[in-house]
Length: 168
Image (tube, rainbow, N blue to C red; front, side, top):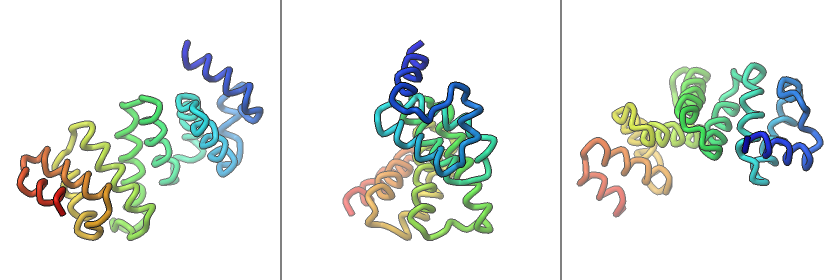
């Protein structure tokens, strides 16, 4: 019921939200994404997440869609979708770049988000360590990279190394 009330309030404030979510999916992707971001920024995270899910069929082949969906799932408290969406973003990013993580801000963001999702879920902690180790080796001064790598070291019982990362 809470989600329905939020959706009604959001529709009152944002005239571009159609009654039927499938109609929203028909809006051109850049405009739809801008609307979703505005809705989320105004505090309607659950509505933004629901609208993003409705766009899956049209945008499922884009890394940005899955990265955004993971972030919105986290913000909306949809914890089960966070890991699967972050994984899809990471896997698609690697697939589009022949298995190589691109040395871009977006590439690092997607990798860090996936590592964080793995760590938060407690699944595949060894994989989170591999990802964060690569990121930390390339960008040791990046705060999020250091935090994720230290956490990955801790959950893999490498406390002394985690301490060194935190102190660096």
